[in-house]
Image (cartoon, rainbow, N blue to C red; front, side):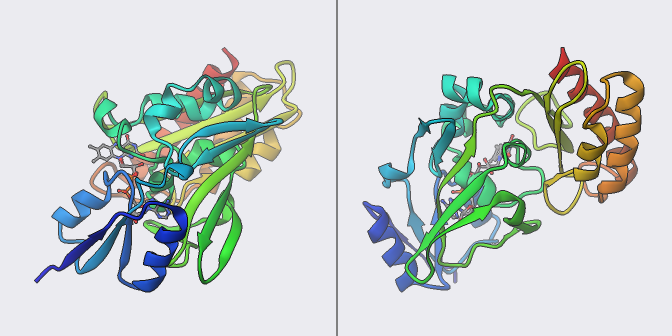
Length: 282
Ligand SMILES: Cc1cc2nc3c(=O)[nH]c(=O)nc-3n(C[C@H](O)[C@H](O)[C@H](O)COP(=O)(O)OP(=O)(O)OC[C@H]3O[C@@H](n4cnc5c(N)ncnc54)[C@H](O)[C@@H]3O)c2cc1C
């Protein structure tokens, strides 16, 4: 028998208490676009669903100085329509344009996208490039900051304790950078990435700074730090892109699965990286 009960707390204090009281059985549900299919598939059962969508305080986009703050319940559709995100975090804005379809974007939250820890999650690479910090809260551990680089542990696994709720995230504006996010899927729309790549670059004659990230090309979304180090100080041209792409290959650990073979992903990484570099500089 599959026994699922349901709570919809009205504020953060109440939510943290319910999660604490049902420690081990509580299952947070935000937009439900991952949780509901998982319930249907029998992967989530015998739990207490804690629906956090009534926690208005966890929603919204705001700026303080050059910092951008996002509530964890902010919808992908709100990010996709936000002028602040387009101007201050354009690489994230690009990812939100190619995320699911309007129905999914109107339900899916940024916190849910990260907490589900899919290696292919569309907001993960852009948020890594933005050097994002998450805030997690629980009654047991209080409030703590987690750099996104330390958040993912493997497919479907994060450093979050079972009681912890992601409440918000923040990053610096990258309005002075040029960026691109490119995802490749097996059809034109409504698709999970076979592989994705994002870049954030500063400087046009020579690169003063370069951030490069890949998704679905390792057990977790990652920054290609050796590739970044190589790019800094280089003059942008096709031969530099080719050398950087070769370094990136050594930083990736693609697997074969139903969306594509390891070899196919290796070729995709090369093509997506070069395409992202050209697009960012265009
Ligand atoms: C048809 C379809 C298309 C999709 N297309 C894409 C796509 O193009 N790109 C993409 O990246 N994803 C896609 N997805 C996956 C999904 O929509 C996203 O991962 C989405 O962002 C999940 O957010 P949610 O609010 O719906 O999460 P939920 O399903 O509510 O939760 C997901 C997980 O996160 C946990 N969780 C949720 N919020 C929090 C929180 N604040 N703190 C701690 N844990 C939390 C839940 O317990 C659960 O484990 C698609 C899904 C469907 C069904």
